[in-house]
Image (tube, rainbow, N blue to C red; front, top):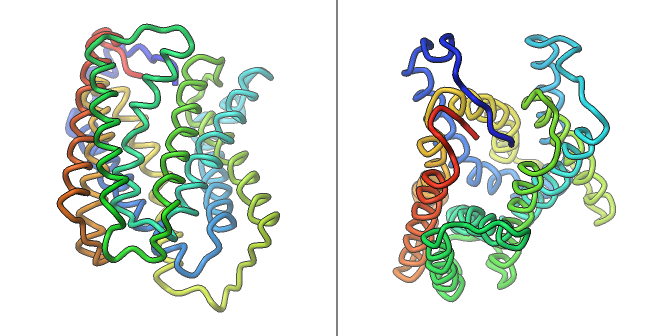
Length: 315
């Protein structure tokens, strides 16, 4: 998402507590989504359920745009629509879709720790396209790689259903797709309304996931879906849209370095919820690897915030 300059008196006078409350929503909801996904895929086909989730969320966001901005909120050029569609393929479809498939074989807490590698991927991709990140950022990437290696060799988390060897690698591939979408969204023309941008991406991603589920031969048998799966799916639909709105609100009223802390708070919340509600158990190696990854993400986020983002702006 391109930088949004916040320099109006109205923005400065809005209550700070509401911005912090919004950030708290992002912490809790995005951190708990991993557990909700785990419950949903226990009795739901992964791609079809994820496709329906993003399609419904996209419709809800479109309704929000109509209510608060009117038809003018959907104005965009063809290149801007193309960017939104591309980001929808890379983020909801590739990124989230692979995580949903993997969570049939990977503990929700481990998935969150592996997804925390996204800022590390972004730094590498920026280097590939010609940017020169600060040296401290590159050091953070190297530290993160060490943490990921420790996580991958630490073995499956106790309590994970399936526990296929390829599950963690699929999550890392998902994180790479999410990072590609993040870089594309920051370098290509995007719709002026960020909620419209997200709505189009969710709708496109939902269609791609649904098509993927049909190709895989997935079938949804409503009678076989458990109550916990329904609750997990509904939670992702409703609270996922709420968390996005809270994220946009917090970005406009808090320093970007503060909002970016969600990148290393979400995995902690996911691990705690997985341990307390899904009986997931982490060994010493897994906890050490996760801690190394989180330290690397903290290093990268803080270095990038100081080097790239001027005061008074939000990304």
